[in-house]
Image 1 (cartoon, helix red, strand yellow):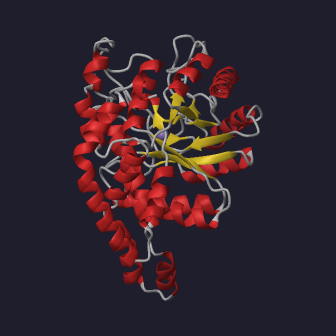
Image 2: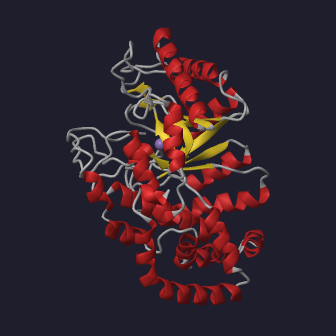
Image 3: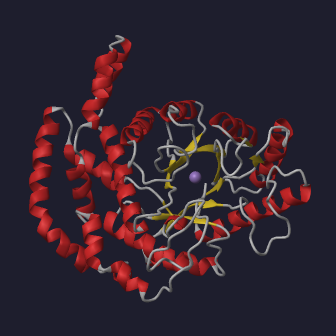
Length: 431
Ligand SMILES: [Mn+2]
């Protein structure tokens, strides 16, 4: 697979300069962790096993409601996007799967797409349907909704689109579909809350009925945008109710950016785990709204606290495999660099959460020792796990310093010659 992207030689050359220093750091950290009763090699194995899926739509430059400023060498089709995803995985060795968005990535020949991905060491994560914008070929508009629309013909069209996504997904080896809708209202009184939710659930039932037995269906909530007064799946409660109505193959997807500021997202995660309805994540970060900023760039402690719940559940809950996916929009950075750094930050939060002394934490919780409980989390969070992450990457053939290795590879300049500049303009945010 390496020959398709940047060449393993480039990574080896960049690692050569950094390897001795990394070995020293790893040894020192190993000694320090051993004093805390932690085996660094076991942590390294956990890091090596960790994976997060990259969104195909994140490889192009995003935009805001106001404008989009394209970068050079942006992918122009799904094959370019897969090349970029392969590069991300080659440097980080943490992103072996790609999430597709239909119709943006709709393949003429799904089998050919699957082979193209496999040749680059990639597989496919959840399929993402799109009924929040109108495709050129569709008959009815989604201006006033899709799965919850008042007109049954529009709902049928939206259901059919989701079924098509499942068919494509089956052909490329996906095992899940994520459903996020833009349905909602901008004015009080515009929409009947109960009837809209009933229509949504009915439509989802028609999709669920066609879901293969080994697939999962994810319902993704979002507080606002594009609808600014109400959304049909506004919060995790609505998402939980919908997933529960649908059945055992339906789960809730938590996009970190889809909540009010200061929401205790880690507690939502704990609730969904407790009632066996956590499907997975769209990782990103935000300051004010659904900013789709790089994971861990604004509030890395929150990301750590989410992983605290996940690591806690890993030990307690049988068959616990939430989907890890990134959902971001990159407006001012090279998307490949942002996705590499994001994948690493997500993996870092996981590793830090693995270092939490759980027996001590439970003891402090039972004794109501608030300060020491908090300090127990902080002790894990303060640990610099970079030597573990970098060594895991190195041993899997990745880069000790992914961004530096990527920059010295000249990948972006190389692909720019094959990819004509895409248009500027408005609107690049997605759910
Ligand atoms: Mn999302």
